Picture 1 (cartoon, rainbow, N blue to C red):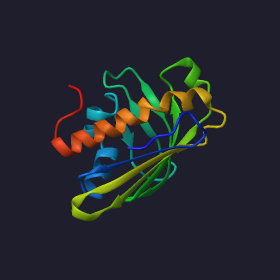
Picture 2: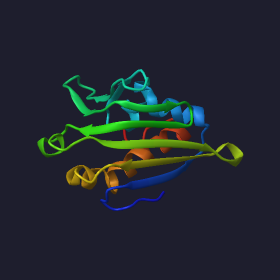
Picture 3: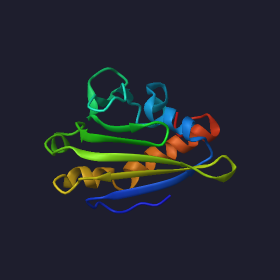
Picture 4: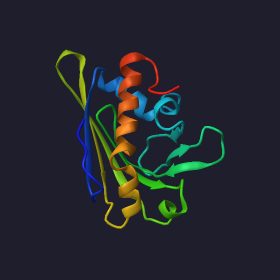
Length: 152
């Protein structure tokens, strides 16, 4: 897995022993996101221009709001990102997240996540760098490869 520090474009890559279709489902279905994305459930239709929101599991509101920019299942998904879980993050403008899934030999896929447009969002850049996206991707990989969440 690769990572960059809190910069205006951050790129993360991980090989996952799963098909692009399985990874796509894990990224886009709330029954999966609850198990690896800090307990949040994704709500989206995946249609460009519609919401791409992560809701707290307890129903207390939104953790992240955004909208779908591009959806090309099961290869590419682009959405905006606006974290709401602290007042400092909520005050910053939207950034963008791009998920790319490339099939590899022997049942593996390369998952690349690029988080960009962070120039005016230094707190967001800091928050998602390092362990932020690394945890999400590690947890997604663990769930898909073992059937069990990283943490119960």
